[in-house]
Image 1 (cartoon, rainbow, N blue to C red):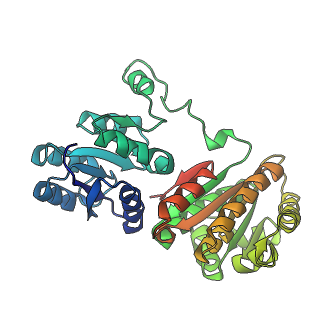
Image 2 (spheres, helix red, strand yellow; image 1 turned 180 degrees about the vertical axis):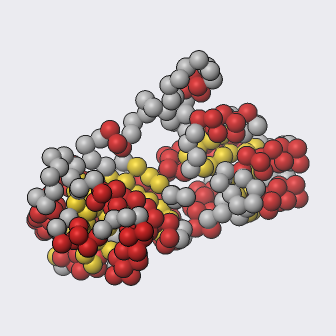
Image 3 (tube, rainbow, N blue to C red; image 1 turned 90 degrees about the vertical axis):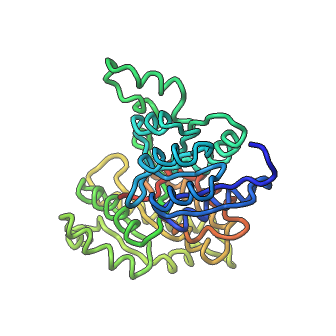
Length: 340
């Protein structure tokens, strides 16, 4: 793209996630104007009015989805290059997005790895697909006689002995639903579940689990459901204000092993959901946050525990937002943004 000023339109219904994207863009000196939109009609209107050079476009938008918006934008602002950034991983959707003239497609779950190179490629006039959407897979998927899911051969957290996943959320209800799915499935399968959270979240989760038919009282009585306070648990791992590795593994190990003994499963019999690491980040201890996530990763492998962490997107703001976001993504085997 020629010219000293590049205009970018960022379209996403999550204001915290728009901040993440704009933080990526601010790292590029050639991007001097950034406009935002929160729904499809607003995206179309601003694209027509401002004719931006680049549009970073979500698909799951209110009122008018990103595919439909892109169709209109293609006619109203034909010189704008559209980079889709979505949680939608269906290859059919990816193909449709690119067929409509999209210059790139990146999964939100891969934003920490793929967004910067995608922006670089599109601004230089090259098309970009996230690493899990290679041209070969796209070509294979266009064979109507091939019944295979072209994404089925990709590495999956379900194929691993354990998982250590992170869920970024804009609203409390999003994470509560993710927790309910993670914990509810485990308890229903006869596994043990450990929740380390603030009291309001622990209380808010109970009616959601109950609505899903999960008898938490019975599970708690059997020792398969353990709910603990995040601040108290985090304090138990600290020595002189610093995470202590030995204390962590002593306390966490006893907790995981004790919970496992209450189940009849042989493998991956415990799941754990916690907010100790997010609490460290909230307190301004970014380096300790990453250290804690690495301890969790080691614990997941050592004890065969599946772990889900949750961070509000509002935690990532300011000068080091992109660095912290990328670092946390890198410590997890799976990255998610919303369940619905």
